Image (cartoon, rainbow, N blue to C red):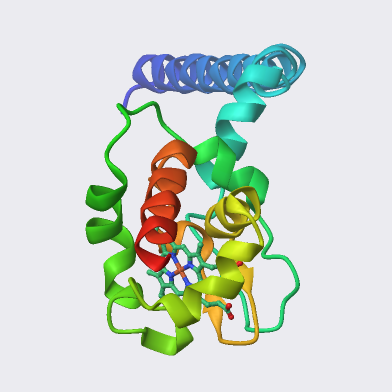
Length: 168
Ligand code: HEC
């Protein structure tokens, strides 16, 4: 390598080195700026936070028999979607029949007047509330909305009314 080439090569490496350094500095500068801007204005934004929380929310929860009041009633309300109301019989067949026809796990059977008299005496509103929020009684555990969190409150109430009618 001639002296001239060596000098060129040294300068060339130096310039490349300086350029890499400048790139790194710009990168770090951009990062520290985004911490004050992006983080503050995007991630702290209540709408952004709410959306993140909604995405992280558990899809369900477990409750043991004997728990007084199943948790996550608020979560249940939030999951609710607008739907056209359906008939109580339809909702019952779709979401409640699995337990309430055969009497699975102590569920009062549809049309079993003996099993329903005392329950009907609690009043329609109490039964609807128990069906929507879940209910742990002496017979067993009634999961909120029969485990069908996609049911609207109105549909669940219609199913309860249908069950009360058949239980009289
Ligand atoms: C996984 C089984 C299961 C499913 C599904 C189910 N239930 Fe129940 N349900 C029960 C059990 C068990 C009880 C009895 C709880 C007790 O009194 O100890 C019960 C009790 C009830 C009661 C009486 C509550 C009270 O206060 O006496 C109503 C009303 C009721 N269910 C409505 C519904 C409706 C409406 C659906 C469908 C949306 C449904 N259930 C789906 C198991 C179920």
